[in-house]
Image 1 (cartoon, one colour):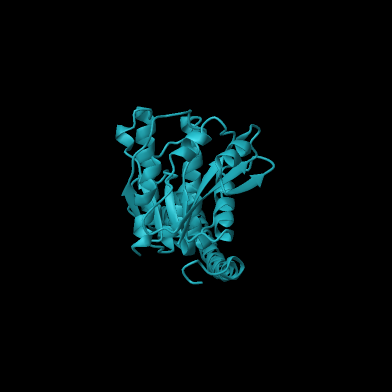
Image 2: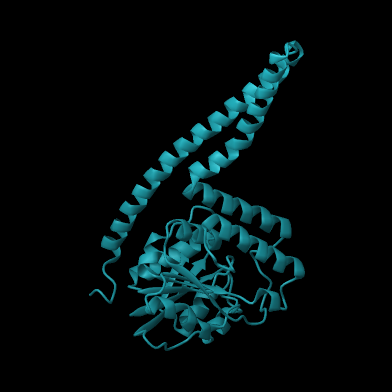
Length: 318
């Protein structure tokens, strides 16, 4: 059983060694532990620090690609290196390395394929009041979109089984944390959360640059992920207000017509018909989107089979 711990890095030379020193060297039930960094176009000596420390694998981007693409590239690199379990952590030592055992234990015990570390957000001193509330609100939104009970959706401290890692896809350029939970929840990949601890802040967050920028990007990511996996429901919910208001206006016109006073309400009839037509068109788009989603699921199944052939069997299956 091989565990690979991956760390996305962008100019992390000052904090990377602290993070690496905090990682576990042995976990009961794990035969091998290896370390992989994703060098996301760093302009400092991040790679040199990693190699000097003894990191086994390096995935290199010549130019900064962002957290989402780095995460997926890391999963790909870990799978190619034969990982049975993959743990993702941050290079700023935000999470306590010894809690990695808490992440991998449910996978080792066959209880889950994805494990998300839940931070003590309300007790984290370097989180502002607004950031704490936004973290809770974002997690609540993801729970509704994914139909899961994950309390800390933005947490990047998480573990994936080999099978779950091969199923992961991220299409947004912002972050992997929210979209992958929606995907796992909607595709019914076994997923649980475990409480973890955090360390003090070594540097300010690079993802949380402005409050409104964070909210906007996060909401768009969640909405896009939900529409991808539940398109017919999403478009149906969108069309209902148009059809409802249009029908109400139409019945109002019929009422006036029954009483012989409809001559002054033709404009409202036109408005009602227009709203109904818009609602029907939105619903038709939902049907088309649902058909596209069905094709996407078929492509994902094909992709999964290709990955199984490409990456080979796990160490347990050999």
